Length: 476
Image 1 (tube, rainbow, N blue to C red):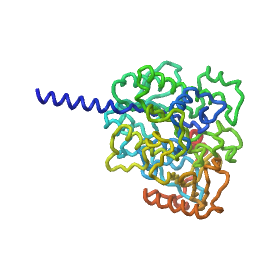
Image 2: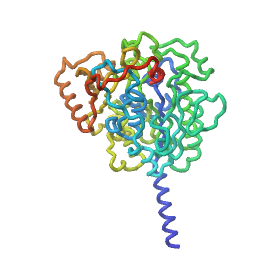
Image 3: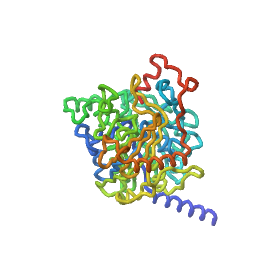
Image 4: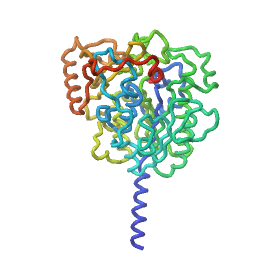
C-alpha cells in the first residue's frame, strides 16, 4: 500500500511539473523572404494572421538561418553549426559544375548523423509529447526518419503542393492542398494533447517551388498592383495559405484555452527567391524581392540568410515589441531546452545561446560576442553564374565581415547604417576588418571547420552531362 502511494505521489509530481512547462509550437515556412510578410514590410502580400501574431508577441529583426534549407534544418534540430554536422547545403557537391573554379568544395553530409541528438529528443525527455508534420529533409529512411529522431508522431511531405506523397503513406481527400493537410494534422495533434505539454514542429513546404496555389486565392491577387518587387499572384496565394495555417493553429489554441500557456514561433528556413536581378546574377525572373536586403536564397548576403522570426510567449514577450540583437539558427535548441526545462544532450555541445533573456527584455545582451556562418561550397544560378562561392562570415553587433575563400577577399559592412550591404568598408577600416577576421579564424579553429582545397585535375569534378541536376538547381 505504501509503495503504491509513493508511486502515485511521484507520478503526480511528474505530471504537475510537466504541466508547469508551456507548450511549444514551431512553425517554419520554406523560402519565405524577409519582407514577404506585411508585418515585415510587404505592401502586396497579405498575412493578417501572422501580422496578428506579431502584434501579440515579439519580432526578431536580425535573425539568421543558412543560405538554403537543409543546413538550416540540421542546425535547428542539432543546435550545432554545419562545421560540426557536416551539413552545409542540399545534396552532394556535384549538383553544380565547379570544375573550372579555383577550389574543390568540402563534401556535404545529406542526412543528419544519427549520433546527433535532436531538440525533439530533448523535449521528449522533459515529458513533452512531440509531433512533426511537413518537410524534414534530413533523411527519411530507417532511423533517419523523424519518427525515429524524437518525434512521437511524424508525417513527412515535400515536393508537390497538390497530389503530394507522404512518408508514411497517409490518406487525404483528392485535390487537397498540402498546407491544409499539414495544418489538419497539426490541429488534430494539439487537440489530442491538450492536457499535457506538447512540442509541435510544423515545417511547411510552402512557399517553395513548384509554384502552385489554390485557385480562389490566386484570383484574389490577380488584379492587385505589384509593389516593390512583390508581384506574383500565385506566390502571394501560397503565402496566404501559410498564413491561413498560422491562423488555424492560433484559433485552435484559443478554442482549447491553451494560448496563454503556449510559446508560438513563426519563421522561414532561408531567404526568399529574389534579389538576383539586382545582384546581376540573373537578367529576369525573380519570384520575389528581399529589398532592402541584398541578394536572396543561396547567398550569404542578408537577403539569403536574414529571415522573419516572431515569438509569442504570453506573460513573457511584450506585445508588439521587436528586438534587433543578432540571432541565429543554433540558438533555437538551447532556447527550447530552457523553456522545456531539459538539459542539453550529454556530449553534444550546443553552439547557440538561449534567446529567453531577449524574449523577456528586447534590450538585453547575450553573453556571446558574435554569430558565424561557414559555407565551403558553391551554389550556382545558371551557366557559370553563382549565388555564392565558398565564404565565411562573422557578425558582431552591427558589423559583418565576409571572407571569400577563392581569393581571400574581405568585405566589411555596417548593417545598422547599410542594411543593403552596398558599401564595402574593408579598405577604409582595416583595423576593424582585421579584428573580426581574427575572431572568425579562431572560431573556425575551435569548431574544426574544414576548408575547401585547391582544385586540381586530380580533385576536380567531372564535367556534368547535359541536363544533369537541372531540377535540383531550380529547386535549391
